[in-house]
Every structure is written in structure tokens, then in C-alpha cells.
Image (spheres, rainbow, N blue to C red):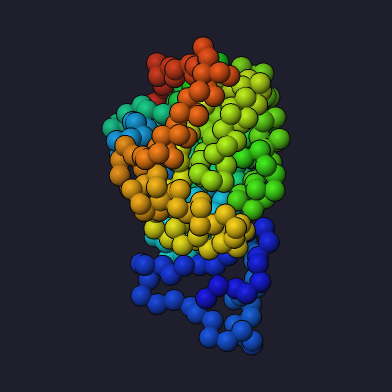
Length: 353
């Protein structure tokens, strides 16, 4: 059951049923013992010590790479996030649980080093992080992402970072060293320049102004910065594409990319609930246009079309993006990684373990 009062600072407003659980908690009454269940919005952190931290990406439309996530769940609260569904595998909800129950992989750096030492390791870029933001608020205290970058620098291994948080500037010293060896790409996601929309859509992320400042500082330091105009939500932020690319280019970004929102699994009902509360006058239009991009459904898992969509709205978005990129970023590109520096025996040489 959804809470009656709007929960500020959260994207999702309830927990949809977890399809992997046979039982679930429900609030039969609004008084008494059920009250904390409805109103408690504190974030809790759960420790995990995985035996494996890096996973190979097998999706044919993402290219060869690895994914590394020091945290599971994300306090940023982006209501559209595809990663919400993965929280259900841990026995939690894709809605409020995803934002309020954050799993912290305490041994991330040590586990990464062990995997890099494996005789079967194949050097490909590691995406940090492909599922949740590696610079979400808890990183300021735990510093797991910084530890991972230090390990990657020791092993001279390529890494691609994607974030919405200005905390990445804390690690500029390590990023500079990685960049000297052409071992790092940085992706800054900018969904909207409208601060009122950002506060509702991505309630605990950095503002667009701060993200553009991150692009500016990283670019000034010589790092290759790609801006992700993502996700594009037709009828909500698609008209902002030219301005986002223009401002990203002015800040020094060397490239840009986009994806169209797709609302798989539990993300569909969460997003629908959110937009009917946040923008009731736009809800039907936005939902209709999203479905038009995905063969009439909010859910789209088809490789090749799931991230770019199809149909008239998707075509218009793609054309607007290409025109904007040509206008503001012509001649720019991201320099390639250099795989030749990889050194596999660092752990034993330095006594890392």
C-alpha cells in the first residue's frame, strides 16, 4: 500500500511487490504499529563481503566491458532508474527500498585486486559503476570508489566512470594519474537543466550547474569527459537536448551520447505513480510518447532498440540529438584507452593483500 503523504527527498513513493518473494509486509491499518512502516524514510546501510566484484557485460548493444558496483541500491532516488529491478534479487523492493536500503560492499578494493590477478583475466574497460552511482552520498564517508581507483591505477587498468555527483572532484589527483596513461574516461549524466524538474526526478543528485562545473574542471585537467543526455523522457525533457549539449560543449566536454527512457519491470508502475503525482497534467502525454518509442509498451528489452527506441518520437529525438551534437561538438571525440600498461602482478609485488 502506498503512503498517503508525499515523501520528500525520495523519487519512488512506495515499494511494489517483489516478484521473487512469496510473502510481503502490508499495512492493514494506518494507526498503531503500522505507522512507522508508512513514515520512516531514513536510509540504512547493510554490509556485504562478496567473493566477486567485477561482472562481464554480455549485452550485445553495450560492447565488451566489465561492470563494477561498490554499492547496491542508490540514495540518489532517480525514479526512472533501470537498476531498481536488481534490488529485488537481494530480497528488497525496487521502490523505496532501493533508495533507503543501501548495500555496501566493504571488501570491494581487495576483491577487485584478486580478480585482476586471475590468470584468466582479459583486459577490457571496467564501467564504474554500471548499476548504481559510485559517487552517491555514502561514498563521501566510505571512500570505496576512491580505493577502487587506486587499485586500478596500481594495476594500470582502464576504467570508465559514470556519475551525477560532484564528489568525483575529490579524486581528481588519482584521475589525473590514470589519464596520464590514457586509462580513464569520465561520463557525466545531465538529464535536465530545469532545477524544479531535477528535484522531483532525481531528488538527491547534484544540480545541473554543479555537474557542468564538474565537466569544466575535469576537462580543464585534461580528462576526456563525455556527457550523457540520459535518459530522454519524451514530453518531459526532450526539448532540452540542444541546450544541454551546448552548455556541455562550452564546459569542455569532448563527446555526448543519449538513451531514451525504458521502464522495465517494477520501474513502470513506479514511474507511472510518480508522474501522476508530480505532473498530473502531463502524465498521459508522457506515458503515451514513451510507449510510442517502444512498440506500444513502457517495457522494452529488445537489444538494439531498447535504448534508442523506434517510431516517430524516437526518430525526432535522435535527429534533434545528432543536429545538436554536430552544431556544438563538431570535430570532438574521446581518445581511446591504452591497454598496453596493464600489470597483473602488482598485488604480490606490493604486498597488497
